[in-house]
Length: 363
Image (cartoon, rainbow, N blue to C red; front, side, top):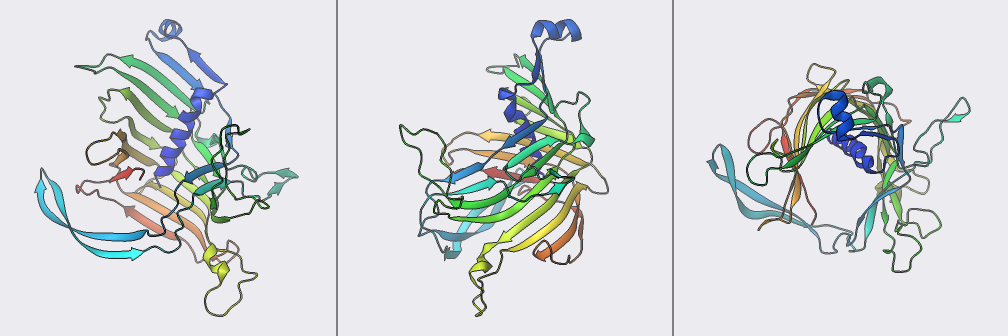
């Protein structure tokens, strides 16, 4: 769940370079008013929207792809950290359906009209993503984000770094329908646009299946510290903050298109809609609290002899409570099976420490 907080923070920082409503102070002005050199930036944006978002997998899934599980065993402990050795393959199953043809994850508007008082209220009817401020959790400045930037000589050889302290208002992140489609060809030299897109639009040889019907994420205020160059804090991005009001996800629909093709029981699927698991609300907070503490280091690890590099996220947060309200099986209009509550969920990394270690890499 805490990945959503990082996405919200990265989204707000990413737009800063193109923000037309930024208020910046140079070193001289800042020094005169605060007695400290540096740069302050206030990002005064009321809304960010994206029409469509594609993530293209250019070689698709290989026709010979396998799901391989290899057994491991602990061979010893070094400085309190277990070491592992690979054993024999315990499962090596072919994956059905691969063609090796480019496909894409696509986020787009869900096309659902919601009229309240004669006004369209669904922000993602025609948009993939709409981010607005959560008015119940604004910074004192009422900016979307405030940044303080300082350059420091650091210590030792190549110790210089830039420090960016960021505070972000609570956000309301509206995400449209998420699906998978066949990718279009990469634009060639002489093309009139850099747009590639996919075959998710009707009338263009449509090849599209929805996976999520959409969701809304609400966050509280957050703070992060970014260090570029040397990173004496131990990571490029350090999140050590408390999200006031916790994290909430609403209107989450998970779709299953496989049943539209039939169930193999002789029943007709001609008029069957995709099956859906619909969840009205998911609230996440620290155990026995309404707020959510976030303690995480995010690093970009470079290439070495065994890897081409990856993103590493180390979390040391404590136990959390989760309340899931209104679970509907089959469709969002089906009767709810009730609510589910999980108290004191705690993860442990492979080192045995509280939290988790997550790596993300290409192939």
